[in-house]
Length: 503
Image (cartoon, rainbow, N blue to C red; front, top):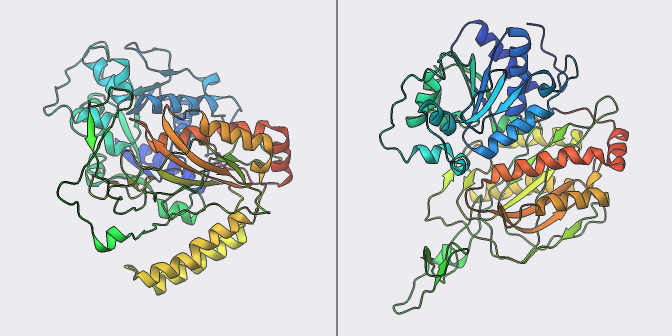
């Protein structure tokens, strides 16, 4: 194979592709790539898939996901990928099939499919379309005794040369393990949060380890802070007097009242953590991804940087340098994190603390929003401080850490550094429209603010929609539309930014 073309790739992506190709050269049947959410796993995957087809003779590659909307997003990423070797788009060179029925296109070089659909195909059954939108992990739990898969002559075991499975930590157990092991194919797993079982399934062959902390250190992701909020109830406790009336509310507004309802205590929520928000009428904000490009490259490089945390929010101050544009939406109270209900805690994936029905406070920034020199000095100072103050921290140390480091970042963002393309009215409106696009359908949008170089938002995911998917749709759309605005493109080129990899 020719030498990897490194232009447009982050160092971590270069390492992942190089290590994977070395593993394949050694004929190892399984490999695992761990990369933090937001560090470009999908773009990395498309890059090595392209090389395996073009230079290594791969006939057909299967890209497995566990939800239909992820399959749609993956197809868009393939359609937007431009070869660094001949400048053709991936789908101009090779046929990419998004499987939505039970028929494989024999001319397709890449098939994108949900794992639940492939299971149904192997069993010779039709899959109801709505089940593709259910998480494969959730569907798998419905089967206590997985129904075994037998050989299906219409889908031979040699159908695929390579299988790439996204979110490998969710798709390798119980029902779905059979799907992966049915084929005589090399397995490549992608995940941000591997467990011991994940390592075991992929034969301990971890070809890339790039966690959230590493991504933060490289400037690929931004760090997060946990704000612990004290209330009178969390400090002193509370009680419900005998005979106190507790009203009921309908958990599913679209259905008649009284059905599927839950009871709620009139007492104030007791605490909030990394995903919770205090009850407030302030207007914080979320940000989307923006893009940056140089005079040497086409304006397509995305710069999605994500920060998700909860804090005591105050009415956002107006900065003359950042020139914030406040877009008000319907005034709805945010939903609190319930410390007594199940909480999904992920080490690398954002958000780190998750719970159904809660409201998230999210911040994005442009890649050049923080001066590189200041950011480098900030990291070095933070590393020295961490060495002097190893965890666990006392409350005084947590306070000092926040004062010395978290507030620095917030002040620097307000200084309005970098290209500041979000200050352009057309771009500000574009971002606002993107945030409002699926309000009431996929999420409930709270207050948000578009500043000159960063954005904040309050958002509550609805039904089965995951925050990570919502953020991806915002970032993917805006990062592709911003460079199309002449004023933004000209400003980005004037700043002579180094190109960043596409996602």
